[in-house]
Image (tube, rainbow, N blue to C red; front, side):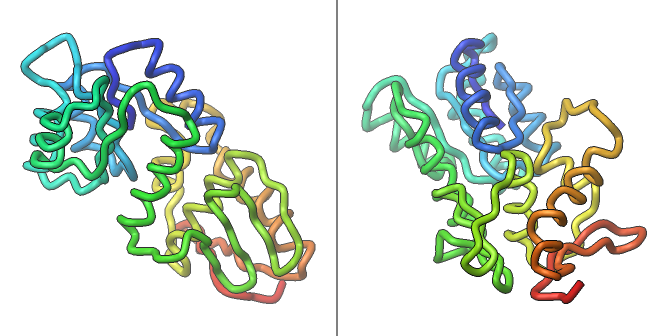
Length: 226
């Protein structure tokens, strides 16, 4: 979730994140951010300190309320100035990291990857399930020595599976984490992307690691022969 009262800045951040394969929800006000953060299982919250239209609900207050309601998603706070007091106050109310404006998209993406790794307890930046390896930083996927080219959305979908190996993930869970809450596209979009992933990560290698669990969802397992 991106919480930013500047429509232009929010649009720039959203476009950059979506091009990198992330599903992004954007909210502009503090009250809306508190509600959305409590209602949706976000992986990371990008939170500007200065928010409108209610000046009493700024980024600090949003973060404090989210933590009070037991929202554990990592919070990356954005500040327009390099003020020690802002950074200290942000950390005190529960933020995990901060970024000073202006910033590069590459640094924002690196901070997000670091927060996601920290939350999942991963030590290696490269995810691996059997011979399948995914490098979030390099945006690369390999099956053994063979490189696999994926679209941004296919990459995001596979990354979510690889962060939850051998777990059954429902269609709703996949939509929540790979698409945004405003998604109103084709009802079979998950099935289409699952089929496309299988054609790239399994079929050429005679494997069937991406399984359909009837009535429950999908699961990425270690090497399973096709």
